[in-house]
Amino acid sequence: MSLPQNQREGLFTADKELLDFLPPDDPMVVFSREIYPAFKDEDFARYYSSKGRWATSPAFLACVTILQFRENLSDPEAAEACVRRLDWKIALHLPVTEKTSFHPSTLCYYRRRLKKNMAMSLILDKTVELAQAKGFIKKRTSQRIDATHIISHVNRIATADLLFRAVKCLVEEIEKKDPSYYERELPGYIRERYSEHFSSFGISRDKRGEKLAEIVEDGLLIKELLQRAPSDNLNTLEQVKIMETIFQENVAIKKREIDQRIFIEAEEIHSPKQTIFDPRDVSLRLGKKANKSWVGSKCHVVETAQKGKLNFITNMIYQQAHAHDCNVHEKLRQGNEYRGLEPEKVYADRSYVNGGAIREYRHHGQELMGYMQGENTKKPEEFKAYSFSIDMQKREAICPAGQVTSNAVLRKGGYVELKFPQRICMNCPSCNECIGTKKTGGRKLAVSQYYDYIRDRREEQKSEAFRKEMSVRAQIEGTISEGARFHGLRYAKYHGEFGHQMQFYLTGAAINVKRLIKAITHGIEIPARTALTCQT
Image (tube, rainbow, N blue to C red; front, side, top):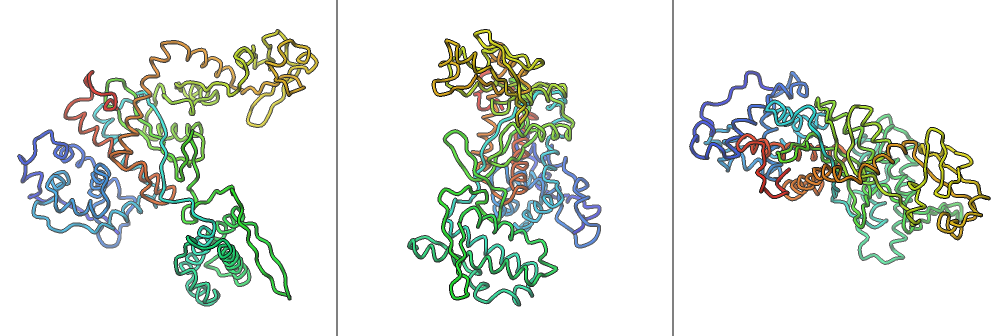
């Protein structure tokens, strides 16, 4: 596809013919006047060919996508709104008499093109640039970050169903990449069996075991056929490794030979360590936080943090559901560098803060603000690690009784293990409280190599000034609630890591456009009596 040259807007568009249809400060009128002109086809030119039939204007589709996510509409609903709704026609500079629209699949192909060219953040970046140009986002403006869980439409299905789906995906990949091999080498019963759907619901336990063995036997047969009669088109089959992983994690496979024939027995593993929940999307993971568990991913929302002002989203970061929040700092820093932002401070909750992260931020001339997690132990306060006098330069510690560690050992993960002599600890009157009644060795302390930063932060967070400054972080909860309740952020709309990331960026762009419109019409300052949930 190629972009149309010298494309001119019509003279009789809704924004010109219906000047008095809506008030000047209506969001759609402001969108038409301020947002729509900011998107140019030239911004997308590198992602289109110089040959081929003309494509639908990518700048126009970007504006449609923003309005679609602003109102949480499906592709068919967005395409229909371009015909039936006058406010959309005003916002998108469409003719009033326009009676036809683009096909809904155009939006799907448009998103696919952005994903293919790794330009998923382009629309969000344009809204950030617009906010910067209008002075709403300063280069050194502080930021805040928090994560929310994203639920994929994938259930933890029965083992037989998961194994069947794994083999079915492999068969479909073979058919797609090499149809002739599919027809020639795969047995007819396998082609027929895995062209249909299967559910183990209502099947007895004995029949379920037989079905498991049948599926495993089919999968191993296909793998053997691929090794015996290789095809040039099938050298890189992703689903082979996925199927092997699913088999290994969910069933114990036994081969038994009877009368020179090999029979497969498959026994289901109870409580498997499952890393693949759907062979069509291996990025999905099981996430757990407190009493909540979900299958999907996580979205880290990053926005500016100006108290009493409208704030704008600067990044939406994808992370797998099981990953720890503190591993996202590098992506946050890269995103800020890409957008030309250098926040003085970044406000986060406890899960983002550790000694290494604080040190890294200070190395870049920034400050990571957040409460340091306490020590996870049931020992009395006077015998917890922070009650010891620890000198990381000398790598020694002095306990509350005045005893000094005998040696220090560097452990995995950069932790330093400080050991007290056993003979001294056993003779100490506080031995039971410090070590415990069941231990016979000396006290050991596992101390981070960044302990000095941890100690300083724990002292700093006791002050009233720190607690007052950290109050600005809580307002990001309103932004997350806005994305989940009004823009469909809670549930994944697309498959795969890039699909999730695309949804995050487009949701952030829609929220930014809403706030841009509000800032342009009413100003960036928020009245003092406005509810806290609106101060985002």
